[in-house]
Length: 370
Image (tube, rainbow, N blue to C red; front, side, top):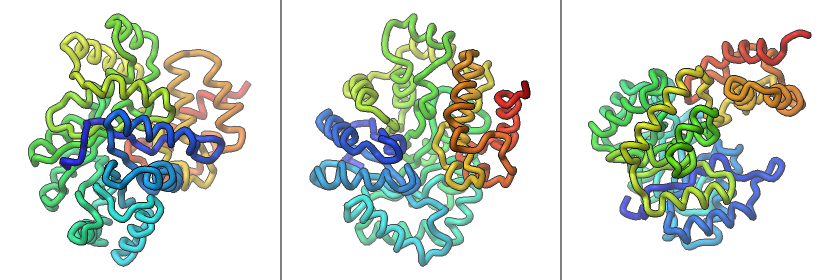
């Protein structure tokens, strides 16, 4: 882990898009700016952008920069194997898709009660450790979405885990569903370095309701996103904070305050606490727009976009959300009322949301009969 130069990483789940394809010209520029600033950590997975994230890594990073100047993390995700024999061929494809011959970090992806049982049954952890022995993986870890007690179980059964990636931000810190603080404390107990995902909660902590904006505005300092990322990066044992940057402007802004990182001051911590309370009082849907739920939806419902409309309606209370719901997000895709309640979305949701129930509420809000 000594190769990591700074505690800020480029999460490649929300790359800039041009139509349905990755805007590789912009990604190349983002990669170059990121590396020139002294940062070198990149994170991807095969499920990100339906496999296009890995190909962007190959074309925009691996083909254009020496292998020893960047750190690359990839993941083994449950939908892409059903038997141990399928893991190695999939891993070799991932190397090819990314254009590299080893991964610096390889994570057992989205670990939780159900996924962990499948990974154990298929001896995925053992296979990854064999790949490490062969030099195809330098460090072995997990990304985690579940209760703290499950994380305790995994780290107890597999002390070989070197690093843990958890969802960690100021809104989810004491959330009873996410248990960010408790998961962080389990990592500290087992002396595992922590990689943070979703520090800005899928972008929802960058665009705040007016009352929250005013709290941060009174500080006359950085942007809402800067406070969110600095909150996460300020804890002891946090080795890396990832940001899923989708524009060059976002990247330049984040580099600006992370290049010479300073933890939040006491005054800034108080402001963060106020903003947290504002969010909790609004009862918003805690969707991070990872979009894992959309690929398998038989009715092609753009679930994260519909949830975003619902949250925006609660936050801003204007006509704009209705317009986007009716004229953009359901124009070519299913409406919330089209849900057949198959449950595929809930099986894969990292946030463990009751999506079927939430879609009923969305339909009631946006599909009112005239």
